[in-house]
Length: 101
Image (cartoon, rainbow, N blue to C red; front, top):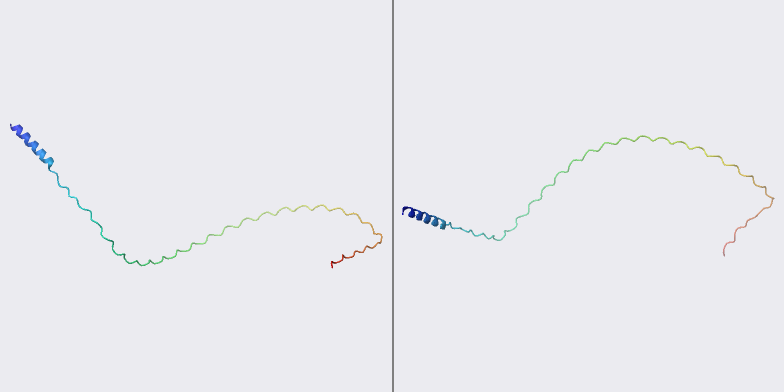
């Protein structure tokens, strides 16, 4: 009987320990209030300084002078034209055209 009472006591302690649960406390979520007034506008910051100007680059070297081209050959001389005939002594007079009235 000693063993059965011991087993019964152990079972009772085990069952009672399983039923003992801690209470869960739920904290309500706070509700935010209305928004406050808008703050004053801050002052404008100062203007930064201008950066320094960069240095001028160096001048490039001058290119070499080109060669003088060859002189062309002189063209051939043309042949002399034939001598014209002497006139018969007749004179032709050209009159100007009449102007429109």
